[in-house]
Image 1: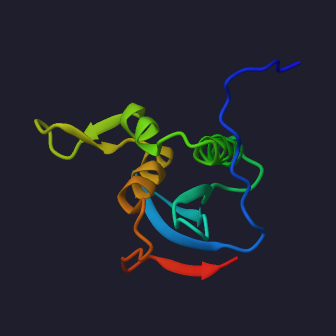
Image 2: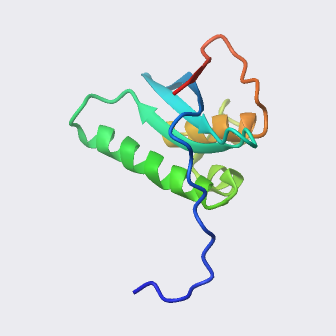
Length: 130
């Protein structure tokens, strides 16, 4: 039994909601990150990650990571907490480690970048209803 813990309640999303899809490149691989929004607040509340070959360990890792991120967002956990904790690498040899080192980090960076912004922009972005 879960007991009576002080756990935030999950904010359930409606079946139809806005979603944005962006392409991200990490190393030599390309992925797609889709972010679903709360229709009232336009806050990001779910993430989907795609780009790995179906049935591979990487596909399962991406799916599981997206579930964990989505559940955290729906419970009100600030995405910045995740984004600050993931691995980072420098853009230059002696530069600061600011660039995400994985597709999961790149996805978190996209959510942070556009959090609270109902007009995602960028050549690789598409906004559409689900």
